[in-house]
Every structure is written in structure tokens, then in C-alpha cells.
Length: 472
Image (cartoon, rainbow, N blue to C red):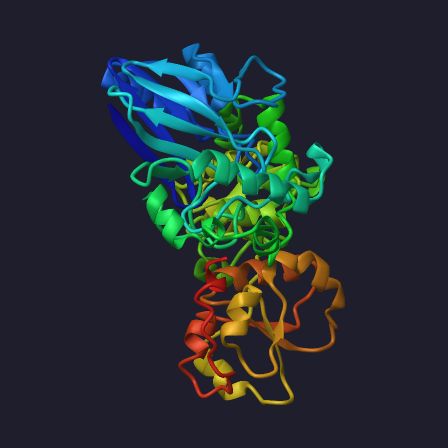
């Protein structure tokens, strides 16, 4: 028996590849299927089942394409109303893969079809669970995403999750390994650990939601407290995972279409396509195509695209660093952005060399900010998460998290200058590009963010340890 966790950092997502005696199973695969096909061929094994812990909201799974390419059936737990061929398994139903067994434990609460898969080894011993979004390391799944589909409140779903954890998971032996679907950074929970594997015993001892003496009422209160609104693209991803989607190969072929400068300009003007520039914040600030939105590929790229662009059907044309086109299209497809028209041939340099109009961002250093900033007079907008702001911030700075920019942008006074910063410069450049695309130029973006500002003499609040909430 072999278990491989295939972890994708930009999505904080874990897929699982399991083999035994010439057969394989894959749990919660990513959108692109070729890496799995390569593993199957390398190991000389046949894919027998594709298991899905639930209808994912934060990414588009590869289950449909993988099933078409291998013939392996897709297995969900009870209540899964797929719009394609799938097995909606019964609670307790078992599936054989080589010499091991996968047993379905129906664990609703995060969603009503959510299930945990228990791996029983060839000796009949409970070895591991693949807990999906039911149990994370340090946290449990948020119970507010399936309210509309289930016709329940988040408190009712949290109550169901309470019993799923205690009746199905906490009854397992302490040495059973826990393999979750996500780790720190995912929006599917609020207090996840950076660790991506644990044991039942360890989680009983350390996970706040598995406290032995916890009442159902206490669980509901603690699990629902501090939940941020889910990103707008979540519902669209659920629909794609439930209904099916365009083949990844088709999406990739479209996105890999190289568009010359003149065609690119025409497409931008005539189609309403969004120009998405995925270069670094430093490169973008020095020059970019007017109206471009910058979300750097070397960061939490896909989640921010999903959060800020939201509509997965939005047509997109790409500006990337040369050689990063395929990686960018792949990451966009993972969160359902399939309407990619193509990419600028030769990247931004081709546009610049052709003499077309360019724009820049007024980016200043932290030292320059420190010299310019007049306490009590100048306005500072801090776009970090609220927990980051609460831990420490510039005195009198306004907390305006990037995730809510589409709400607070309408309150900006275009005639009042302000300074804009995040933690390190990645998110503030995203905000700067959005602001300039909407006509605001009355700001200075601070390079290096609060990390650099904190080393200057700019007045700051007292540091408050946020060891628990900062994991959110």
C-alpha cells in the first residue's frame, strides 16, 4: 500500500493518490489530469475509483475529465445529486482497491453530501481517514456554505457537523492518520494549521472543535464565530463540480493562443475582456497596459482572482512573464476561469516596444513614506486582513481589507490623497491596479508594506498577539 499526498500550496489543497496490488484510487483530484495519468502509467496500476469528499467550492476538481480518460467511476457519499454518471454511496459502503478497503463515513455539516473516507489496510486495521472539509488540522469545515442548497441555517448545519465529528470520527482509534483536503490559507475554514497531516489522537488533544467536554451549543458558537463571507466564486465552482465543465485541454489550448500586439489592443477594446497581468508587483508598477489588473502569479494567485473577479465566465486576456503562460492558464482553470481568450505574445515588453501607451503606479519606499507622512494629517489605508490590522498598525490608519475593495472603493474621495499598503506589497499592488482601472490616481502605494514600514519611526499601535486569529 502506498499513500501520496499531492499538496498544492497556492490553493492550500491536498489530493491523494493511493495504490495497492496493481490498483489505484485518487481522492479530490485537481483540475488538470495529466500528472495523475503520468503517475498511473509510471506505477503500472489501474485507476479503479475516483473519490470526492464533497462538491468543492474553492476549486474545480478533475473528477469528470479523469473519469472520461480512465473509465474509473466517480464516488461521492450520500445525497450527492451529480449531473453526470457517479456513484452516490451509502453510509458504510465499502470499496476494494487491491488489498485495501475504502469505507464511506457520511459526515454531513460542511455540506450535506460531505463524507469522510476511512482506509482499512490489508490486515483489517483502520489506518487513515481522508476527511475532506469535515475535519482539518486544527479546525473543522465552515458550516455556512451549503445553507441555500440544504435549506438550513448555518447553526443547524453546525449542529449536524457536531454529531458527524463525534459519532463518526472521534470514535476512531487515536493512531488513525488524518489527511484533510486543505491546510492554512484556505477559505474553507478559519483556524487551520500549517500542518497537512495529523492523527485522531492529536486532534482530540489540540483541535478546539474536538474538545471532549464541548456541548453542541458551545460548538455551534465557536465554529460560527468570526466566519468571513465566502468568496463570490464559491457558488460557481460548486455548480461546475456538480454539473460538469469544459475539458481542461480545451481551456488550455484557448489560453495558449498567442495574440500579437495589434490584435490584443483590438480584443481589449471590442470584447470587454479583462486584462489580467500576472507579473510581479515590482515589474507591474514600472509599466503596464492601461486598465490592467495585477494579480501576481507568485502569490495566492487563484484565490485572489476568484475573490476579486468573482464571475468565472468573465472573458480574460493575459499578460504574463514570458514562459509563464501555461502555468497561469492552469491555475485559472483550477478555480473555474475557463473563458481565457489568449495571452499577449512576447509579454509586456512587446507592447512597450511597439510604442503603445503604458501606465505606471506611484510606488514609494517605506523610507520615503516615513519622511513624507504627517501624523494626524495624512490618510493611510491598510488593506491587510482585520486580524493583521488588529495585531499592529499605523496609528490612525483605516482598515480596508482587500477582499472588500468592491464595497469600499465607492467611499474614496478622488480629491484626497492617501497612502496604501498591505503586509509586503503583493496585495497593495492588486488594490492599486483596481483603483487606477476605476480612475483613482490620488494615492501612493508603499513598497514592502507594513513589514518595511514597521522598521521606520512612523507611529504605530502597540503590538497585540493574535496567535489564534492570525491563522484565519
